[in-house]
Length: 332
Figure 1 (tube, one colour):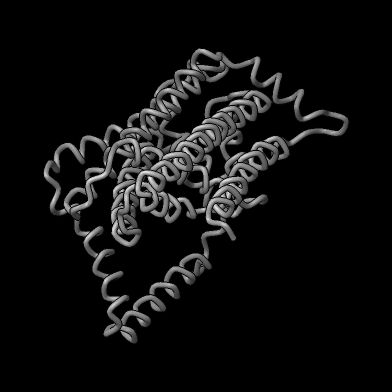
Figure 2 (figure 1 turned 30 degrees about the horizontal axis):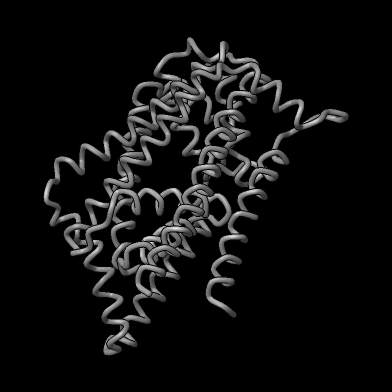
């Protein structure tokens, strides 16, 4: 197949996925008998202050700009200097792919960066692992802070969910992670003398240890803190967009962070939809927000983020396509 046709087909598939994600987001709205999803979406949107939602979009994009800059910083010690443009485009594409393939964005953004600037995937992926470890640390710190501030409310609410705690239960995810880790270590041990594998492992290791060779560690820490403060501000502006949540204050924002993280693992019906189940319940139980308004808030908050990522990711996908094509023409 002609490389140009193949490339167009690949990007066409990604655009199709983008459109499918918009459709899925509409299908995810819970409706009663005889109700229309688009009407519910429109009513929920009209209840919100579009000015605050626009501010939320700006904050979200700025947080991704800082994330791209932080990633660029991590790659410098590996000897691969990339532009802010290439880093940002790759980050946005990663978020887009994550919407369709959970955690697939981590690999796709590294591959896109390779196509744009030639940075080896194994090296950039090593830096992504470091990023994720830093983000997990920041998230855990926020969760601990939220429980410290709202301990009685949060623990009281969690106790009403009837989450099973008795006995020792092994998470299937934990089993998979351990199995994959053992498999990777075994493969590296078995093929340890393979030159190609040595090169891959060396690049990945360079990416991981790049954090210890940063030119400005303080700036890296500052970027990490700023990213999560922006996430906090994004949640706060979303709350200000609704009359029923506008006066809840900063403690409620912390609770949203905590409940949002718990929702990913809580044994509630609906799997990934537990986020849309748990947060409205929490807003109603903890802060007396009417259930209908709580559902509207959670839907707008989540759907608006998704729409921004879809638009930004699709635009970055197109921009990357034309940049890669232009660079190939320059080489010729």
